[in-house]
Image (cartoon, helix red, strand yellow):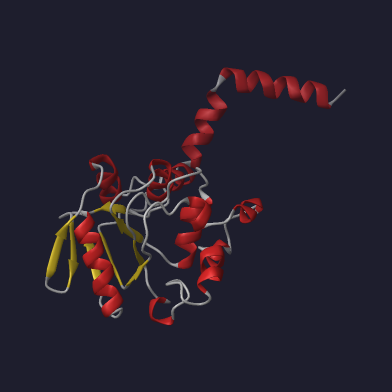
Length: 208
C-alpha cells in the first residue's frame, strides 16, 4: 500500500482571529446541499468575508498562498458538518494551529489529513501577530518531534497521540486504505453466507 504518512507540513500561514468560530461561519448552511465537496473552497468564511468587505484574511492578497491556518479558542465548534474542514482543505489549508478545537471538527479534519495542533493561548497569539507583521514567513510543523518552528522560535504543540501516530504511519487515510484493499474486501464480501443467499434470491426474482 502507498505510504501517505504526514511527518511535516511547511508553508506560509493565514491568521483568523477570534474565539468560538463555529462551523456555520466556516461554511454557511446553504452550501451543504452540494452533492460533492468540489468547489467548496471558494465559500470558506463566505458570510464573514462579505461583512469584512474584502478585509477578511481569506481575501487579503498576502495570504492567498497560505497553507497553515492560525486560530484561537474553540475553533470549529457547533454543528457537525464535515463540509467545514473540506472547504478549508479546498481553499488550500493543510494544517491548523489553535488553542482548542470542536471535537467533531477535529475528527473530521484529521480523517482527511489536516492536523489540528493545540498550543497555549499566548503561543497562538504570538504566531498570529508574527504572521500579521510579516506574512512571508514560513512555518514548519514537525509531527515527529512535536514542534512548530517559526524563524528562531520553537513551540511545542499537543496532539492526541493516536492521531499523531496515524499521521506518521499514514493510517489516517482509512478510506484510501479501504479502496486500495478492494480485492481483499471483495473476497470477504463474496464469502459472507447471507450475501450469497441474497444474491441467489435476487436472481430468482429477476427471472420471474
